[in-house]
Length: 481
Ligand code: NAP
Ligand code: MG
Image (cartoon, rainbow, N blue to C red; front, side, top):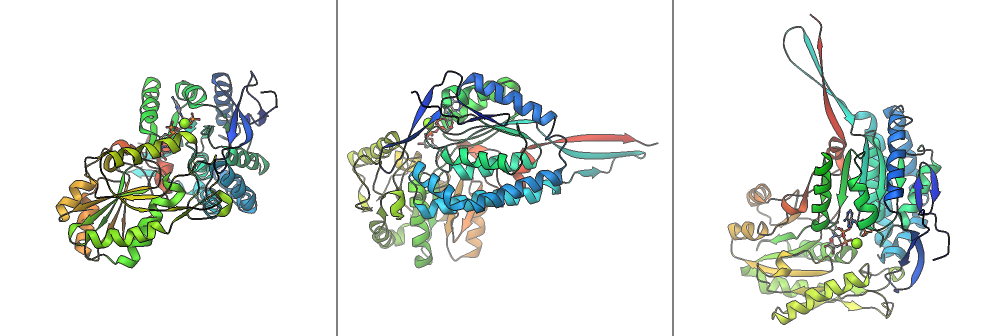
């Protein structure tokens, strides 16, 4: 490639990869090339980590919390001002419908507003100790944070991880997914524009196996934040172990919606459908299993199928219920699940429709409801990361809990029942990081701590819990006898 593509930001300077290599950017709605990004690797990562270290020990370390907060809030406002431009970039790059891209950008702005406000409210503690002593617990930033994020919600992920890290006083090196990072490049420009000092946010575009692996291996990184697949999560945690640094891993799920026979059907149906079609099912907290009490199974799936049949899929700018999936690879992956299910005799109960804007060359799949799915089938166990919903019958409360907890994942769950005592019993027994009762917040809630049990990962993002991850407690003991 010959064009000059400066998508790497190190120490406030935009640059291309040292050897000039680049990666094509393709629009999922058409399959056509829309640009290119630099292919950064170890050289760029190491320079970015060194810049982040200098900023941590220098300018950012000397910036008072109140000032850090002001800068983050200012970035939030600037993002809100540029919302339409950012949403257009995000929709074209990821294929998501415009209304979802607009929501994502609003959430990105909100992350900076929220953590901007939180920066100067991270109080320490005092602990009663022996006579003549005063003990203080102060929360200090970890230092240089390495962030590796996926392609499904690039802008939101930027807000979620960068705003929290910076609010707590860390500096950052970010490696976004090569499939979708155009909004992140623009967001990083805005960060510089509002005055976040050089070296505080460093961005290295490139492949995971190259730039990502180099970031996890760099011994001068103090903390790793990763969102993506369980397989890569394992690699990240191994690399963190080699360098004795902590990591937060957010690795997706197989989240259940549990529907009892006293469900408010009209309230539940639209939420259950939107929880699986949101972002074309490419959401870590997608509600990809619907567990239905056997007494209402037939009636409920029939009503659900009607709604799934009405879902329309098309290009991002047609702004329908669903856009394409991110890539040809992801399209094949989702189709593979559907083909194997068919071969295994699992019935398709409902299927969405392709709109005329779903042109050949784009990466389109039809949202699909299948069932009854055996609880051991891959559709009931594995993350499809596409708009595929598995219906599974259950007998009673204990059966529901057993099936809901019966995967390697544990991210979030929805409980649909009007019985208050049952709501609470289930909420306590489900091994997941978030429980929704008579609702479902796939990905929602900046203020709400979020993270997994089991192979969904560990550590918490969002809310004040994220600030605890990005800081470390230091104990100071004063002898004043
Ligand atoms: P992935 O490979 O885990 O990618 C996530 C991030 O990790 C990307 O930035 C990726 O870079 C980077 N990466 C890849 N290999 C790496 C390595 N060896 N060291 C360090 N970083 C590395 O996920 P994917 O390929 O995008 O998607 C595969 C599956 O993961 C999906 O089908 C889905 O099941 C799951 N997924 C889950 C989430 C979630 O939110 N939990 C998000 C996305 C995907 P590059 O992509 O640039 O190579
Ligand atoms: Mg990838």
